[in-house]
Image 1 (cartoon, helix red, strand yellow):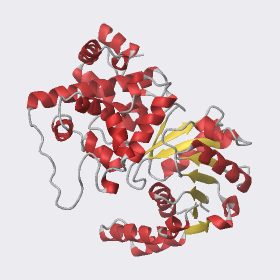
Image 2 (cartoon, rainbow, N blue to C red):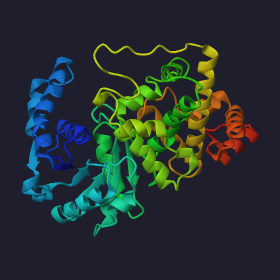
Image 3 (cartoon, rainbow, N blue to C red):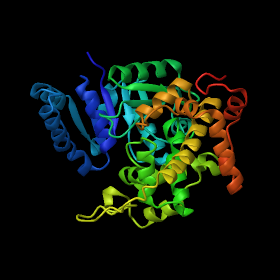
Image 4 (cartoon, rainbow, N blue to C red):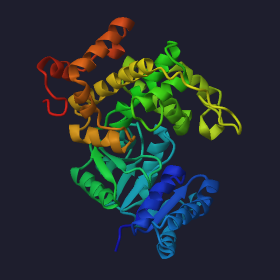
Length: 392
């Protein structure tokens, strides 16, 4: 008999996780404090399942079975129904106080053997677990949106998480067909830490007047090979999510200049211009609105990509040096979690560690800012002519 899976939070992420578990044969319990959101789940999932049937990825019988395995639990009924769950995944608002209260309530409802997991993208696992009687059974399982589609899940043990809990959770999520990587409980984990320069450096170049939004996006796609430009991606994610993660990482890193947020993006958030979801962000998504044309200057495009890549590669190298994750997991995380064209360490070796170092030193000398400081590991690899993928 399959394990019972509980999911707290029925928004896009929570409903997606519930869908994965139900399709994989689990009885799933799904709840949300907002009754309207919870009530909308069946219709939303049915639309998704109909597309799966149309594309030949599921049969009608499989959809019926998956739908029958999902039970909606009203918030007014409390969490007592979760007593049968062996794993409960929380996917609610990114507020530490709310998550802590939720985990206290969950701990009172589930069995002593149940694993409690948070889908947080940037908050401390240790902090979320701190109010629990048994913090050793709490860990992070960070899915990427949309959860049924994106293959990566970051497994994040807190400082008190039991190793057996990590093994159990990772084995289960691997069995769901996901690719798991192990991250330390540091701000942003792997992906949201290493990816910050993909957004922050183009924002800097915009503010410095080096290029406009359309040109920066064009450069990263045309010359960098990325599927979406940084401004397109920020609008797609939503500034209420992307900016908040940036600010969270920056604050948790003791205001390290490397992670400083952009006032330009903050003003969009303050104005309610959240991107696609609100109809306007860096771009206007109103019907009939025209998209600005980029300046397709190859030399400018290459300079833009060189600057962003130097920062991304440096961040990846520094994450390895500081034990955030192994080299292999860093490479897998950035290709499967955010669809980068190749792993950043591999990319750094292709460019050459000495060339990456030279670009960072040029930026540091021109700006006088410590945000461009090279990782000691990058500097060592450049000096010794060693590969970033193999250096110790």
